[in-house]
Image (cartoon, rainbow, N blue to C red; front, side, top):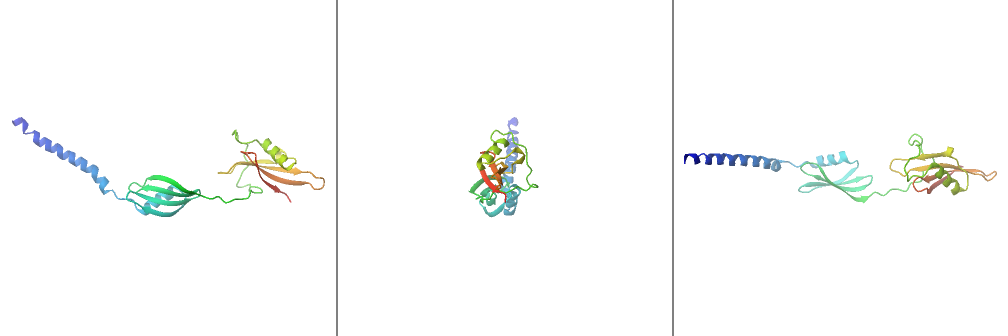
Length: 188
């Protein structure tokens, strides 16, 4: 009988220790505060450059509607941790129709060598396309390749048309992927 008396105190101590550990795991989840709306907006602005249209808080997350260059998005942020849960595009941005530049500014765009990608046409092909399009002559010395960030690469080819006294020149923009003539700018 004496040997069984120590079982009860040890069992009670083990039960108390177990309750303390389980209570410590529950306390942080119960007492953790949600981040503020300003903190949620700050997290989004750090990750995505754009304008916040509106912020709405549900029980577990913030739903932030934001306008970026590429369109409208709804970004969901966890209200406890501030982590981005999802980013969903709700509307695409409309791109304005722009005229092709007559001559790209030299300080912004530096001519580059031809790319080695299989899908880009070569400079001699661009020269031939431009010359055939205007039924004139062009050479490699008057051809430049441009690749702007986020835009389709293109060639600018200077073409001469000889009609006796009425000789004319034009700059032809040729799409480097498709070989399509995108614009013709006549010299005055």
